[in-house]
Length: 143
Image (cartoon, rainbow, N blue to C red; front, side, top):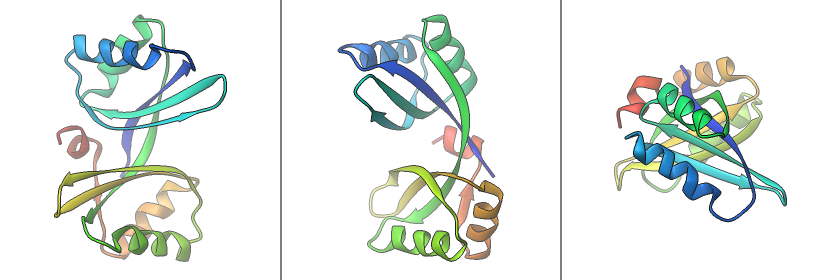
């Protein structure tokens, strides 16, 4: 089970992030989660939004380089040790985490971990076998 996210390549200069959020705001697209990584010259903004296709279209129309990729969304209890429990499954399954980001769905109750794996099918199978709940694209986008 995979969740679609948008990945936006942007120049590392003042105002570019605000340009992206402005495009999303004027198109009534809600950001569910995001991660920003940068180098000296450019950044990669990864976001799960309320409407992936509409967001990608609007951003492309405003001149951004946008791709759609997939991540694995795992629901965990919002308590100490939850990330460790997930990473123990990752380690035992010999999975490589390319990147991850997280957010709290409901403080003190539920968190959501978003992973990009080298082998997402193996990851999904391992999490399911370990009893973790995987969220669908629709479930995450409707949060």
